[in-house]
Length: 126
Image (cartoon, rainbow, N blue to C red; front, side):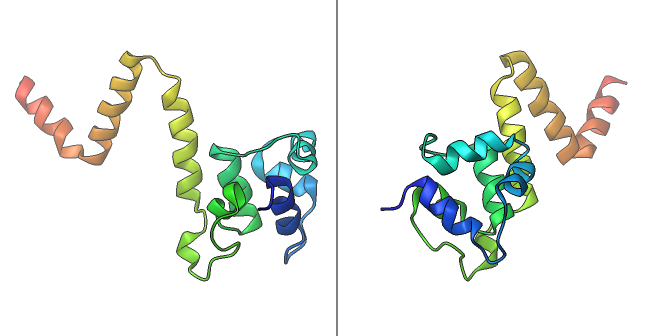
């Protein structure tokens, strides 16, 4: 079974061929972090870095993380989307919130999801 470093090296060769710096920029990290991935010092990748790297390299994130599945799936819906990246970022932020702020975030999301709920609450208060 291939290591993360081996899979990254394969993906970087493309097509199209990608530089380590370009991958670092796409992931929002410094080039030495990519060097650690490629040297094998970092054994796994997850979360936002995994999704950003998979999206940029146009590979299946499961393949990149574990070696399972197709490198480049024939079904493009299996590739990482911007929504996937946004959700990973939101989840990372949410995970670090205290319980009171988590409750606030949930309330805000519910209001955004159903704007009429705000109107109902305001009408109820009148």
